[in-house]
Length: 180
Image (cartoon, rainbow, N blue to C red; front, side):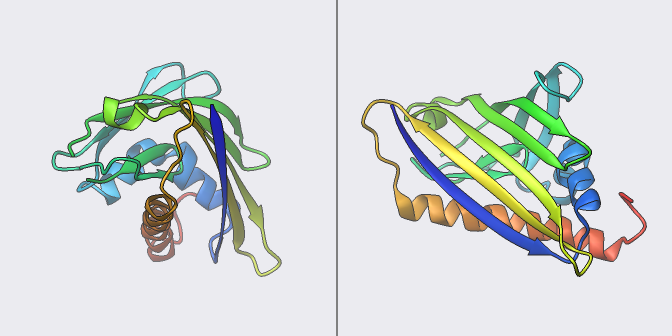
């Protein structure tokens, strides 16, 4: 098994507490509402949403995957190219005080899992002196055997993850009184 690690950092004018609430604690409701073309629902199928819980991400009809093109968003994995129905993530840690969220993609359609054992994600939201936040995500792709992931596909996927992040950020900027 090989492990490929990527680290992404984003800055935002939104404080970490609001982003954490929107992208982690309320993502099950907010993200499908803001992005119905991509997500049908995010369902907690085991547990209470905290550590040990299993969340199933159900993609909208027409959401497709491209082999080896995997991208991540906070709390879910989102891929493009043949039809994908769902993936499952295990919540490993939810730290409301330090704005840390760790989870692992553990199951999905064959086109997602045929090359991967799992993907682990470590997400942290930190305050900046300007009142916004610096947000870091470390993604570790644990591949099966000697499989090597396509760097360009991963890069394109990470850009799509930033797109989802920006959709939520824009919503929070337009609605300054929510998730306070």
